[in-house]
Image (cartoon, rainbow, N blue to C red; front, side, top):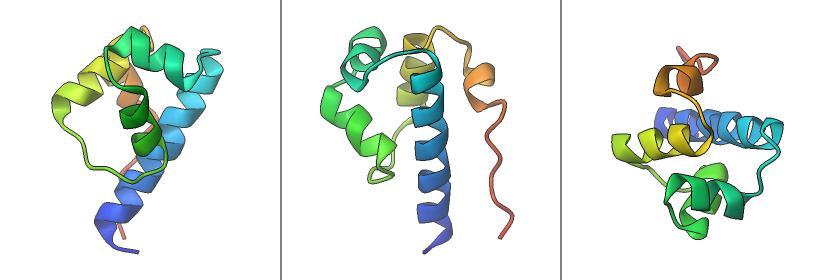
Length: 78
């Protein structure tokens, strides 16, 4: 697994955890974030690289600031 794949997989797991903690389905998060269901699904599977604007939309959809979304997310060193 490449570093990029590791980063996407870790964020995918983190996003899924946050979404479930908020009690949201993928469809609900997509609606709240103004994103497509399939885009959220691909992000949660770690299958897509995405833009900063998508991160911002996800934070808004979860009802949190961007720093809260990324607070517990750690980039692997290796």
